[in-house]
Image (tube, rainbow, N blue to C red; front, side, top):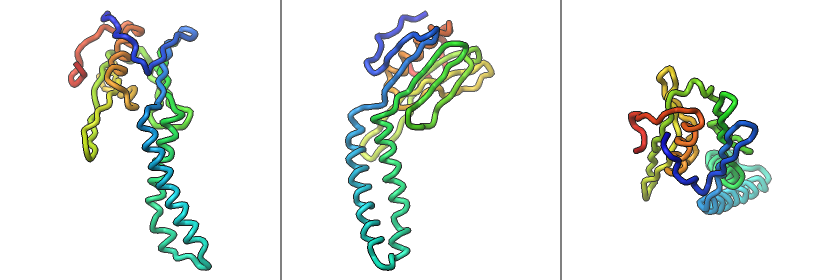
Length: 184
């Protein structure tokens, strides 16, 4: 087995009742600009609707026109809240790999039987903003039946993804093996 790199600062690793549990909080400083944007965006539409609804007979177009914008406001507020409150728990033990995001609901929760995992590997996800390219990393599994399945893809840093790969491989007794498309 390969030696583990030092544990990245954002990961907490504990052994509980025969299960290895890795916890990663979602908070990072980029949550603050999202929060400020969300507050100002939502305040504007709160003001908009207060003005429209204060009219004796509100204009229907004025009521319906900003509905998509209100949806953006709700989504950004929820995303900001998850940045402050959520964490990901990654458990390995009792024959399972369990990924749970919470306390606020977020997609990506899953349970995989550990004996159905043949190999683990990390890859990157590239997104392009207006000013720069951003990369996040995910932990994937090659299953015994040959299909590839993403286990964890919630904004991992490179060192976090690689650390998790080696830690879980070691826990499951999997020898590292190359996978096409994996991080070097």
